[in-house]
Length: 144
Image (cartoon, rainbow, N blue to C red; front, side):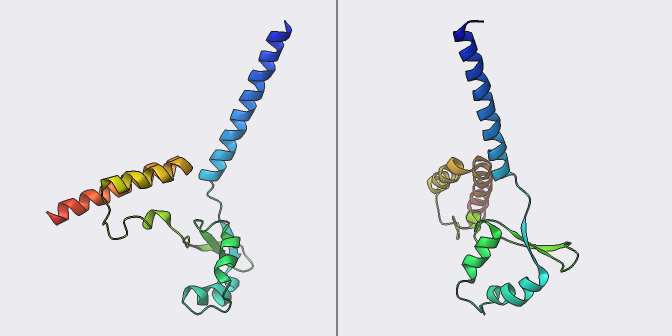
């Protein structure tokens, strides 16, 4: 085998490894169903009052995000002592509900937002587009 063939073989092997690693990371970012979780006692005694508008600490949102990992992540609440997940708290920032809050945007706005989401997370971009177009369709049908 010539040096050029060996170099090409190594190059192809490295490219395959990079592609494999990229797919593992990408899949982990988008399809990770593992929730960060906290004990029920911590949720009830500390965070629940915050969600009810009576925070004990003005920095509670940052603490919550540090537990969740991101503002778009849910947090599991588990039973003290058993680690059984009782329920999950929805994300504090749901980007799907930020756009067209009152369905006032036009089709161009929908596709602009789709491009923004799709460039970061393609699977969410497609989900947003389908949901937004269905909502816009319902709005048009109900208004005419």
